Amino acid sequence: MKTYWIDTHCHMNDETYRDNLDEYMQRAWDFNVHRNMFICMNRADLEETFRLKEKYPYIDIAFGYHPEDVDKITDEDMAYMERIIRDERIIAIGEIGLDYYWDKTYVEEQKKLFIRQLEMANEVNKPVLIHSRSAAQDTYDILKANARTKVLMHCFGESNEMMKEYLKLGYYIAFGGVVTFKNARTPKENAASVPLDRLMLETDCPYMTPVPFRGKTNETAYVRYVGEYIAELRNIDIEDLQRQLMENYGRFFGEEN
Image (tube, rainbow, N blue to C red; front, side):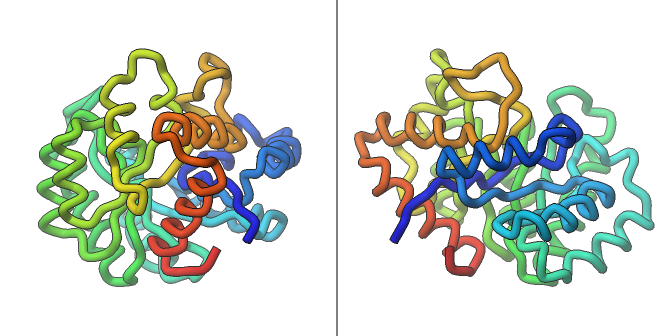
């Protein structure tokens, strides 16, 4: 079986890439990145990504409202989400969660939005992709109480102790470019110790560009550098790691790769 890299979380539908998307997607293919999860955070993102999937059938699609947008989400938006997540092209709900980093004005509203989207995911039995920033305990408590489908902790940056608690719940853990940063001690520790059958890789592009391109715009092709770094960190053959990641992705989303 041919092995390849999978980017489990990217924003290649962002306007950053719009004028040269063919070039970016070709580079990803050349870098042996043959599957990409496009994250859609509003209706325009989603409808554009539906169109992109017709051209790039190896794109997967997740849809959910980001916590930072909570003050902009209307009842109409929620009704739209409740309808559209039944579309078979949407295979995950996300990224959803909590973010207290910049602004704590809407903490209670964020919690309500998070819980409602988890309930929707439960209703359609689709896995969830979780954003959590400066909200570790609230995120954990809400997930433990409300999540009834598979859970992937996107861009995991919490403590090793918190990772262990998520692993006890059967969750999966994703790492991006931060793990390659020189002083990222905790992400390196987590990436080295997470069970291989719970590991995922991502870029979260256009953010968090890995070494050796740190400081430049990230892109889905660069998940290769995250993978190569973790393979070296764990002293694993690259193809063996790719094979495990492909198996994890298929198991998590309930499909074959």
